[in-house]
Image (cartoon, rainbow, N blue to C red):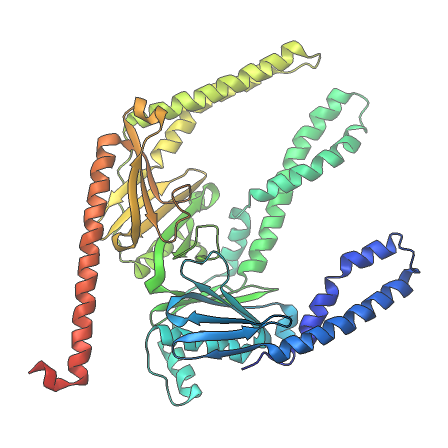
Length: 498
């Protein structure tokens, strides 16, 4: 099969738009004559791009069989790929504004163990994209094909059960609570450029600094909040989560519409996150992590961007049937460790401000920095009180974080590695960290679920317990699959049961 014929003008237009930086260069001082030179360049590039895309369209072919998706592509050199259907983890569909006007869609396939998109069909029709998504999902579930496409669609709709749909109130709250701290660094780069011009409006430099500093802080927060809110609204507008057989299906997006599947059999961990603002309002979010990806990669899908916390926990329990966690906190000597650490940081900050007051001519109210000293024990307690772990019969549940508290649910049969580690400072207080690594974690270097600063002896016992329960869980799953195979064989041939 081939891409949609409209892919030729669409991809050609994309290629011409990438030439925008060259056009800017022309207008800023090229020897060519203004619009004439730019027009000639656009026409020439359009002809070349159109010819290339025509050849690309003719030489791009794909075929979905019962076992694999075969793709042949390449203009100058040929590339043949065969992607086993069984290894496909996620099948996502995206459509920007232009694609939606033309009836086109882009379908991306992620496979187990991959760190990027395995294959992408960038310009197929919307109907073809949904057919591929549905068929690949059916093949992974080993379902028999129906005789008519209409019957497949009708059955899928009948089986589909809506789990969550974001409301306007939740979308507005998401814009307020979902401030992206990475935007603060961008804003702080821009503000120093503007700050000198603002400070020059004041005759006294110290007055100018006193005015612009708090103003800059307010502007940073406001700008970051506005940008985050706009991004949240555009990214999660119309968010809808449903369940079809053994898959979760989501749709979201305003300017660019996304649609994808999350196979339940590939789920590695569930993560319920609550930042400080959302926690005060009683809201939380749910992320479902599939194999081969870390929390910041494409395999971590937002199952619920923001909803009432009890509702989020209920939805999480419908995916993995864990009990309400009863967390056990680290020992109190861990809190003492945090007090010492934060107190040392506060003392260094006070000393630095005091040194600036003594060694410079600027009058610095260094004693105001002393407020950090009594804050240190409070910060230590807040960190300690939000740590915890809970061993359940089929799951280990871990909690960590104050500014964004994350509760991670890990099924034992998904555990890849379990270890306990101790730093030099932890050994002084007989503490350790238990790391529970899964196929979806970012490895042993960071981002993995963990029980932080628990008793060292307890960590060793937990490591052995999790390892034993992992083996027991795997044995039970193998036995269940064996019984299911026997039942399917007996139902196909009743004479074998005699």
